[in-house]
Length: 611
Image (cartoon, rainbow, N blue to C red):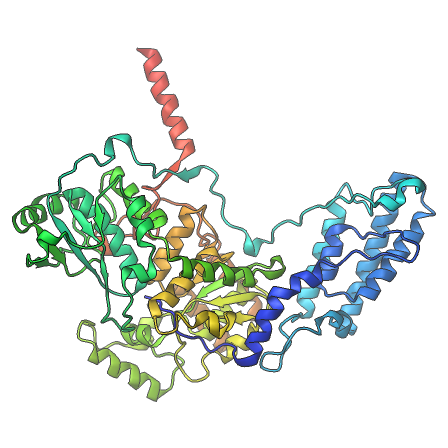
């Protein structure tokens, strides 16, 4: 369970300036058309202009001079064919000059960075090493060569020059680090069958539910309870949320989720009430913890009999009470309708979440959401204390022994890490992102509560200075209504993680399961799941000096080539605990394969024709 809390990555006045810079910078970057004294307009090829203004922060006066030179060169060129050839030569010449200027005079491109504010003494607006420069310049050169329609501006006669010139814009190909896997053959298929629309006005009884755990554990449990209510033809009362977990959040269902929307969206599936009818308020409900990972037959038999006898049942636990596989297709689709359509956050949470996403995407920049689960409760639960001091490890051990329902008390931290059972440390996460090819200028959103350990985030911030959390991205006034409610902050984190260009999780907990499943459902958005079992061995070899950085990066990329959130059928296991969680991968069940359906249709047609 990943909760909200604050991540000490950036703060104070610097955070305020960065929020203002993110929201205002786009307006500055869009002012790229320069008018000469004679009223003529000179245009650089649009993709190159975009790169110069937004990426390289080229000084406006240099852009004006370049445009004037381009305009003068036009007078000596008569045909459109020669315009393209000469323009290409000019652009390539400029790129060569640009490369050396960036190598020997970095301040050349910092002219327009005067509005950037320092973080830990560093400029976040432009952090560029020589390798990044070479890659960026080469990308531009490749773009020039590959375009067959390079135009500096559509050639027009003198008589209509004042009316402006049309420009052809060619989109840049998406860099591989941001590309999602192909999933063209799959589509959402959760439509409610006509024969499954609720028709009965009677009910077999009323189901009270205590959703236990953190926000995402409760979210998954609630979706299971919707399906269970359908199995038993029971009326579901809006679930109560856990107030006694590690975070002790007093929020109720309607404080986090839009209860009216939840009820309306599922009206044709089950009956949902905000509270018990008055005639049943005096009835003492039967308290029952359903057997974990139960099949539908368990609820149609054992539990339905109890419900019909007592009329009101209170489920004391909601997590992992239904199997991942083996349910009727209509029930699997109902779970997805509950999760992806009915469970919507309150308007207040949705509004702030969208606002923070827009800030991260200022200037049309992509961002990575990193689920960095290096938090006190998770480290105590898993027994992981690598990179921590002896005093911090002892504190975690005490906490583990104090929590009664955590059964495992003695844990070998080193062994657990080598098994791949520990969350990545901030340092490990920074090295992982760097090896995967994400440059130091990448915007990173930390999806987590407070990161544990003295100065734990220092190395990460040094590597990736453009690092944010909800506490640094939002203003204090915006966060004020949420600060005492960790589950509401976790809901903000969920939204920002779900909307990210790339989601990376460092521990396979409930939030990782919920977010990656939601992203698969919405088109298999890029989601990287680190292979920690092998990764920790690579990083240990790097630290020992037996593996160079270049070899380390190659091996990390190769290791994760197919761990990018692409489609594959949910993996079954010998026991429910050992198989892939339904909410982490709703395929099959809520996603269908168009190609397979077409092939099946052809087979059926051939059989029919043979008859």
